[in-house]
Structure formats: structure tokens, C-alpha cells
Amino acid sequence: MAAPVIVDLPNTTTSKVTKRIVKLREQGGVVTLGRVLTLVVITTDGLEEDAIAAANLASREHPCRIIVLARGNPEAATRLDGQIRVGGDAGASEVIVLRGYGDLADDSESIISALLLPDAPIVAWWPHGMPAAASRSSIGRIAHRRITDSANEADPAAALRHIGATYAAGDTDLAWTRLTNWRIQLAAALDQLEGDDPIEALTVEGAPDSPSTLLLAAWLHKALGAPITVIEDPAGTGIRRVVMARASGKVELFRPGTVEAVLTQPGQPDQRISLPRRTLQDCLAEELRRLDPDEVFGEVITAGLRRLFIDEEVVRS
Image (cartoon, rainbow, N blue to C red; front, side, top):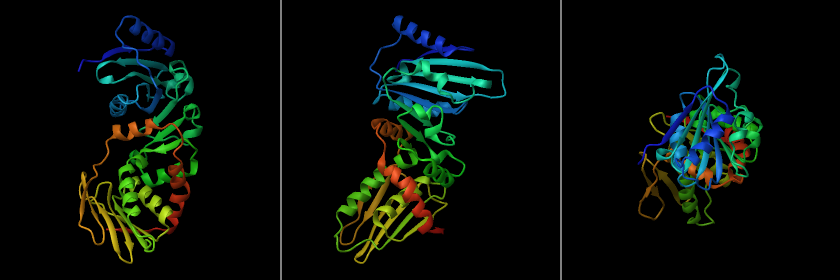
């Protein structure tokens, strides 16, 4: 793969960054593509590279302009450092990195407004450090979708409560996106069950710092209404097990590692299922496929999660 073209613009303005992008195109160094959206990544200086790498990979499916706001030291002298990355490992995107210092260290829509693609949807992503209220933040107000990641917060459970309390249509969290394949497998198993033998009890087991475990438990509890137990296993990583108990026997989906799971159902041989932990770029690409609100997530993060915290029995192994 060819090396990307990287242009550093220290102590610059967004107007100068825009002009430099146009000049790069005129010089033939950039292949013009149909950009389908603008992805704005709001993070902290020094934490941006993993997010950029994931966004680059996701952009191969969704060509976009990636604008990264990497907050610098607010106590430093006010300045804006810019960087443009195109071609090579920048994928099907243009990456614009803005590092603001002093008065420009805020996540302000005014900093990026000149760089937004005209008539294209805007997706805002906070890979680290979610805002007080995503939909009411300066950039969140102009975004069609707003993505947070509670798994990267100091207290993931508290972060989920906060998302639920401040939720607005268009919000989502990558802890929910990581559940997609679990939800598909469990929904398929439920579809095969006889209707006159209801689920009597639910058990969800996972790592104590896994917000995905709590969201899966909230989704199942809300959908099935059965008593639920959440088992916190400090030796585990992410979700490990879901058990749905019925009078005729239990349905269990157990992932002992990070790749393969075993589905156990009454009267059937065990079934091995590929259920690998999802990568950051896979989750981001999924969220970029839809620009309409995720209504199921909205119900789970608000009513479902609230009900879970009231009804659940927590067991710490």
C-alpha cells in the first residue's frame, strides 16, 4: 500500500486547511471520491491514533471526510495545529486532524464548520470521554448520529445510566453495537422455542466492567419479562454466558474464550457457533450504515436499563 500524503499545518486556521485540501486536489495528489458523510471524532491529543485507524478501515465501506478534534492543553497559548492525511492507509477518506490549545481546546462546532462536507450527513463519535449530554453538545446538535463508547469510561455502568438519563433520538453507544451477533444468535434460538413453554428465568454472565453485559441483560429482561440474574465474573472478558431457563430445560449460549461459542438446547446436540469479539472498525462501520435513530437501543438504554437496575439480582463470583 502506498504511503499516505501527510501535510502538517502548524499554527493554522480552518480556512487555510480548506485551501490546502483544494490545492492537493489540484496537484493531483488526491483522488476525488463521492463522500457519503462527515465523521467528526472528538478525542484528546495523544489518544486519536486508534480512532483514526478504525475510521480509516470503516471508510472503505463508507467513503467520508474524517475530522478529528484532538483536544490539547487548555492552559497553553491559544493556537490550532492542523494535519491533512490522504491516500495510503487513510482509506477512502480524507483525514483532517485539528489540535486545539488554549481557547481552541473546546469541542466547538465553529472550529469545524468550514470543513464539513456540504449536504452530507454528520456523525459525531466520542471514542474517549463522553460529553455531559451528546445531543446538546456543540457538535452533537448538528450531528445526525452521536456515538459514544461507555467501555472506555472509568465506570461503565454509571456511563450507561448517564446515557439513559440524557438520551435523545440519534444517540448510540458501541457497547450496544458489540452485541449485534449475540442478539442475532439469541433471537434465532428464541424463534425455535415452543410458545407454550415460556422463559421462567434469565441469567447473563460477563466481566464486571463490561457495559455490553448490562445492555444484553436489559434487552432480554425487557423483551421476555422473566426474573434475571447478572453474574459478574472477574476472570472473564466481555460477555461469557446467557441462560434462558424453561420448564422443559435450559437454552444456554456460552462463549468460554473470545472466538467460538456453544449453543445448548434441550433435545438437540450442542452447536458450535462462530461468535468472535467484534473489532472497533467493525462496530464503527455498522453504525455508519444507518443514519436513522436506533429505536431498540433507545428503549433499552432508557426503560430497559432502568428496569434492569431495579429488578436484577447481581452475583459476584
